[in-house]
Image (cartoon, rainbow, N blue to C red; front, side, top):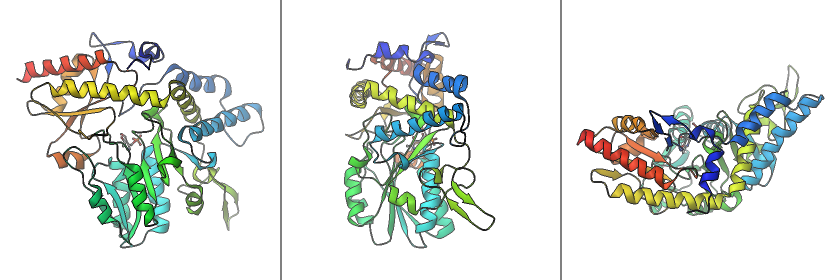
Length: 407
Ligand SMILES: Cc1ncc(COP(=O)(O)O)c(C=O)c1O
């Protein structure tokens, strides 16, 4: 587990070095948002200190510097996910906006009443609601792939759902509530055999494992900067150029136009067609720095380290009577979601906070997952490469404290 030099890495994250309620902070809420390393913070402050200017429109030096750095971020992201071309990298606010963009633009253009979109039963609300809205507006039907008690998709059911009315399969890569890593290649193979494109919600996978969109074979992928050690307010939609080129703009205004008269507007080329208005320039630059930071550690090493940490945590949790792990798929990432009959998740979270331990409690914006297990909420400890086995031990001690209080 030492392939990642955690002690050195933790020095890059100043926020981790503090006491919360008199105890060293144990930050285990990484699926909600990750902390930011110094190079990301420095890249953002460097932009505001030295280069602040609007992009793409200026001939002056500051504008050119800002544009170069903004576009360098795009190229870094292209490389990171092995997209064929930087023009396919669309800056958005985050995963939610990426999903809404595809639903709004692709869906409104290509779907008609009676068409079907397939999702899984473990989607974040962001990959449910945009399609539901199209259901109300256009009359499309949402089909949901169920999963077993471990949290693994029932692939036979999926295969049976694909038919001549299927227009899109939009699935989560790694579930934020269960940790399940879904079998993307098999999902894509079945969809593509029927000519159906696949959209992948990679919010929880891009920060934790090597992602190659060409290797995965998907047609769209979207993720959030703030979950991958970058800033909030910035994220990415990647799509195949031929699909993006056929899609109408999502929002309109500056930068997405080539020319405007009162009679007609000619749209700009990719990626600008989808980037209306002044973008989050500092965010894009910060995200570029986050990508470089992750590349320097190595995504393969990150995945291996977090796997080992998750397995250790799952074993320790399994030893505690009264703790039920929710999400035990054979292939899963660094998420430890659990339920205790003895105490409500929010009470557990409050006791853990008193011990300096930050976890998330609730339905994790995946209420259908809670319904599937007939529980109101879970406590979720979600891991990063800066977490340690000692921090898992602190979590276990915190849970012992919960048992002392609630019996
Ligand atoms: C799997 C998944 N999809 C989508 C989202 C939404 O991400 P954002 O709020 O950054 O748009 C999240 C956030 O928790 C997520 O975990």
